[in-house]
Image (cartoon, rainbow, N blue to C red; front, top):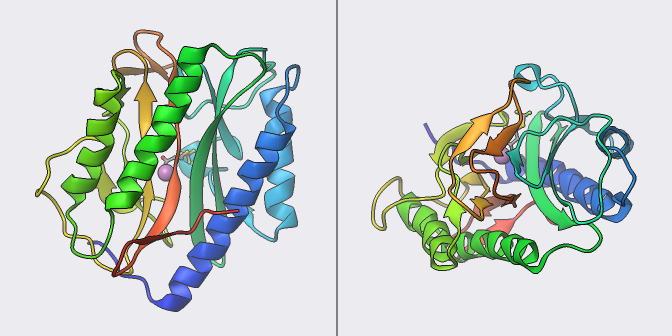
Length: 248
Ligand code: MF3
Ligand code: CO
């Protein structure tokens, strides 16, 4: 069942998503060559708590940290560790926060130091594919139209969407219905309605989109070792379009 949120509920989601956006902005500012992913996790946890929120991922299905930090060929769910950020890395941050029982969940990918042009293009294409999806969303549109907008754009650029992970509804639970694949068929699927709150999150690989989960049970890497990027926004469907909730 896909929930329609009332305006008080959207207010709480907006507050949670804003904490996430501010935390991502801080991580983007603080990341540098030589910092460990654990240090970045600490920075994020402090920021979320200073904002009066709670980390949304910590303890979720046993996830052991505040942030997912996924580097280079890692697609999503990288666990913070002693690993040091290097010149030329591309780093995806995925952050969750809870305010008044509502979740925010968003992600960005940032280049560190001197990054190869093809990896910068991967980041641009992934960010743009999210914007393509958001441009399609409004009351009355079908989910397949949104999914197709991402896939079509990414594949036209010669890259691949990851099919094993999807976006999702968001609210009192981190993952609500519907599941939102980054591939689909125009005219198919659920009809979106004003007041639905969704997390749209394209994950894109330079090679094939197949993934492998490492022995830690979390870190998803591209099976072919190709680099991967991830962007995610929480949005609320409106009559004329959508409101981006995860804006700093
Ligand atoms: N954005 C990711 C998702 O929607 C974050 C989940 S990480 C977890 O699946 F640790 F919370 F599982
Ligand atoms: Co998500």
